[in-house]
Image 1: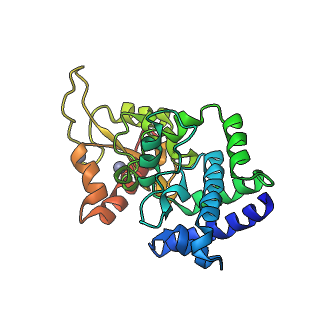
Image 2 (image 1 turned 120 degrees about the vertical axis):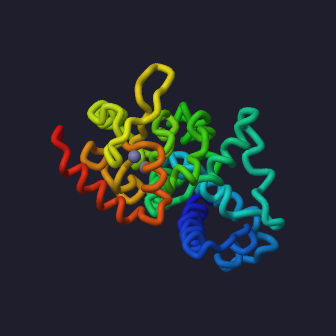
Image 3 (image 1 turned 90 degrees about the vertical axis):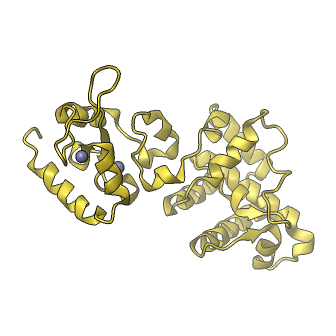
Length: 259
Ligand SMILES: [Zn+2]
Ligand SMILES: [Zn+2]
């Protein structure tokens, strides 16, 4: 049973991956059809396969993928999924986190690898294993969602570095890098050289910007992080001149005399 389920899970993961690229929608019935099964009698089987995929996602520390990507016949998230054995109040948070996450190729790869680690276990036993291996599972699955806005602009809200800790190792930020850059900027936007507005504690407010976004494989190093005023920070992300700004910021960092 579980061997079959694992093979199906590999295929369903690929189906979700393809649909994700094409921004297509899936439900248990359409997935059953893609697997060559009768959608009328196989929706439950597909739901179990999705549950196994989500155990693999949880094992990998990735938000639950199948839960939000494969819906029921009414094209809503299966209201039966995650009802049992889940602490009160956690279900909505789990869903919110998954819905707001932009799944990347590396997320898909991580789920695939975890599936191999859970080989031989059906969905229920796979979850038991994951719960045993990850004592912080509920906390992790219900962590505040990784806001897609923050995904795009990967470093806003850097005053709360904790917010990013659940977004996966790829985006983990080193607070030391941020502190070092801010200390050296000494309150002055490295781009416009203006002093940031004053905070209640008397220090000037600046934000740190990753010139090449972590999401685009930029590094979390002093050489890729610049201290800027809020206005230039937003322009670097959303301005018509953002590409040009990126080049200018790279030059500014190279010219720093304190590096
Ligand atoms: Zn500025
Ligand atoms: Zn930024």
